[in-house]
Image 1 (cartoon, rainbow, N blue to C red):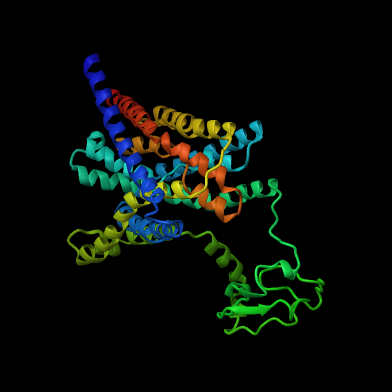
Image 2: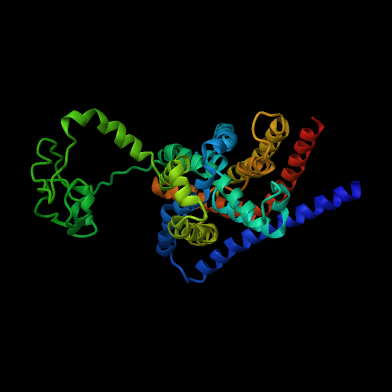
Length: 439
């Protein structure tokens, strides 16, 4: 019996290792292509934006929608709940480390936000190829159906973590900008400016759709278009010569004024994956629409849903490829020993250990679904390297991106450790399954 158990363990481990290595090789291919100059940073940025704003929402609509029926939501609630809870726990661990070791605030986000989309989706695809995923089948599922179900369940967590990150990460990382003593304003005289004729962004003046060229010598007493002050600061007349907008400033009707702030605030919280999830939820919970879009015999499924699925499938490998390219193109700097070690321990040891303990103590007790695939994914959700989104947010809030990208490069080299996490997850799932049989 022990020989059989040992053989099963080694088969699972090497199957998971093969899957993890295939993920790393996909990332490495993107790294090499970028280093060779085949793609530049602007191209990578545009493709990355395309992945997050189009391909990922399409994947969510095509893959997650079929699982969002009223009956299935009652059994799958544990995935988004644990996704949110584990993210909060990981951020708290990061905050504790930041306070104890006096590190920079990006460590909190590095600890709290794993790569919850491209890496686990591609890892599941690799695990399906090596046969590791087959042991979680319900019995009537073939490999392709099982993989689609696994990906749809992972996407439930993606929406939760994306929404949480976009709300808290920019505020946290702005603390580093304050610590670095950076200021958004720049002082100086016109002779030291970049150009006497400075084109301004259309967004500077709301409603003006044409580029504005302003001569700094002629209007030196007013605020120039690049945001710098020239000469005397006269608050009383600083807006006296503002340009007339090319299009009117549209106001909300008076009787709807009370809705303006809540709606604008809600819209700011939206992200493309969240919008995709809302569409998928609406279609999934509406029986006629669910049948029209997700029934394989429906003409809409063969056209619209299949088109969304085709676009969504581009996300899985392409996003991981782009992560490798970004690591090659973003300037690296020493992230610091304390920051690196603490973040890596959190991502590859503490959080996987926490999720393994959670599943071991709770699975198979009737508290939530007895689906072994769900149990396995509960372990996978909080584990793995930090999300590349960390570098994007650092760039957005204008903090030093070098240490962040340096840490991310190191972090992804440790991604094969996910093979060990997957193997331990299989053991815990098997132990929980035996508990059900014993009952």
